[in-house]
Length: 151
Image (cartoon, rainbow, N blue to C red; front, top):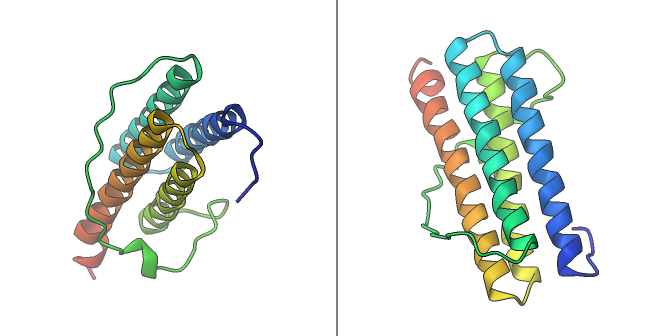
């Protein structure tokens, strides 16, 4: 992981990652052929925008409302081969890309939580990690329902 010199650098890094994630989901929404997946990916983009808003509140010295809850991990995405998001994406491949991305985001926020001493900031990163875990779970449930059960 990247080295940081200050909490401000950590926050700027996390904000940039959320902007990147929101843009990714908007691009994915524009590429998929299924209206329900377009809607789902657009919703995920908005949720990533919400994560950015929480980070910006902390950066401005405000305290967002935080409530972390442990999320079940089905680990479906952990056992699937990586997919190139630049290639052709059918429904299955789009779900795999999304699962892998959410797993990476969970790891990022878990690692950032371990880097900071500020309890408010640590709590925020734990909450964001759990939100990313929820995203992964939603994609895993979708994969289980529409890919694994159909095969």
